[in-house]
Image 1 (cartoon, rainbow, N blue to C red):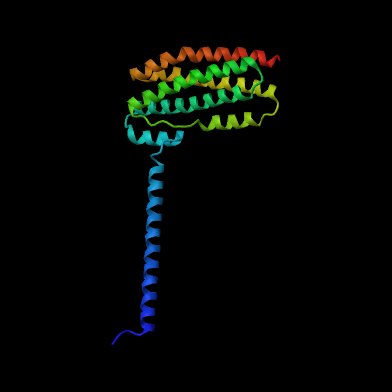
Image 2 (cartoon, helix red, strand yellow; image 1 turned 30 degrees about the horizontal axis):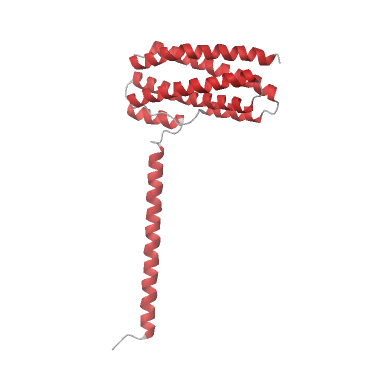
Length: 210
């Protein structure tokens, strides 16, 4: 004897409910897997300075290798900051000399950034793909400056501080590192960095008196 229409309807509803529950469970499992993968890869993504340092801590086991990697990470992040600072002045400043210095700095720091990235690639050092937190704050503050003369003066002052810090860091690492490739890069980079500093200081003196 065949099943009644009511029985058929009940079985149909049961099958639909089971399919719906199965689909929901698959989606939940997929979501959990996606979250797990994303949180697992977060540590490995060296986009930020902090993440790059964490990745290098896992790679390098000796103090010297860790110190070299830390230096390269910080130098790369600082160069991203200097490049963005240079672009900002080239766009916002009304002072011809500030603009010329900014364009020169952008070109030179792009070159240094590429050299650092090439060294990092050869040494398997993870490096960030963006500026450091301090540069972010500085750029935000300069962007908020409405008076263009004050902007010029503050920009020069910030770039002087940045280059003095960079030179001190390069000189200190030159004394510490035993890596010949890193030593060569630092020796090659220090003379242009000192020239940049002299240019910015001269520019600063001029814009202060405008």
